[in-house]
Image (tube, rainbow, N blue to C red; front, side, top):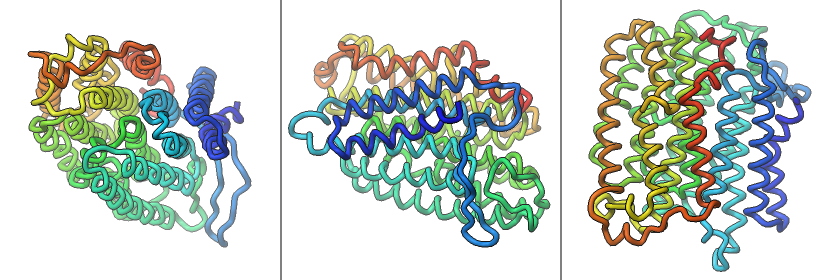
Length: 486
């Protein structure tokens, strides 16, 4: 089974090599995504939630860079990263299936290989970052995923794609540099003789003063990557101007890396630092929920509304993190999965509407439900999941986060963040009304429904995931029981 995890990780890279040597790009990418998904599902079925430590571990001999700094390639799964590796493989397959057919047309044949190579590298980097057990490789894999994101957005994007790609690069490079400083500060703050990059060997040994000094570097570094207020302005335009498959992968999967990193480092090893900075970061997360939520209400285009909505929901994840309670941390994992599925669904379907109607402006759309009922129905499911409708995955994660924050005594933060439910309902229902109901506009009249199964499958996969996790959240929560006791 250990080799199977390595195969899941290596299959996108193998497809990249095959495409570079002339293999059919779409077919190679699809095979790689299927191998990763099937392999991850087999690993999930065989995962033992009662066992402690990491499972399915594959590792190489440590590489000593000098007398005090060793790195080691090692991958493995536990109750924290298994749901995210599974999310990556599901959204990765959906994103590859959702690549428009025009990418493979005669006039774009030269660029088809480059498109799928970059998409596969995002998938490879995201999966490697979540599966890595060494901080060095965790960081490097994430950087691998960022470069193709920039290239795909800058070349194949929409609207003001060059500006958005440049802004994304500047913000995320800055965040990565701050994060790198935080990782080194974390490493050198460990007592001499106990310094390690291996997650399996780390112990909570820092004193409170060191924890309080290291934590803000990690939270700001990871926070820029997650679009924590006030470092969020890169995200809405980046997602709005990206090709739909890129937005699906980045907003649905890669954006979870920052929260995952804090779950790995800050929660278990810097608890006193978390406590000392709670009030400061609770104010920032409330700005994500309330300020960004109010900005979302005033958006006039569907893609920008979805971009700001994604930023807003990051506030809930930070609330669960700073609760430091088992139920809240379990909710963080569950909401990461739910948000990943729902936001990938919404960005993918928004891309379908843009390709058919030529616009995503609310003033130019309307009555789409009469012209494309299946597309409309699938989008509304994603919208209801984003709002937090019971029976869909996001609801379970959000309610557990609220319980955890209340149990932690964050009463005022919890009470104010609940207003976000009302705000998200307002902007999402407004979007549904503007796009799918009312009089049929000329632009909406050009939209054809998802008539072929190859058009439906990527979104049906995501909808099934939302419903399964929503009805039976234990499907995900059982993996983290030994870690959080929830």
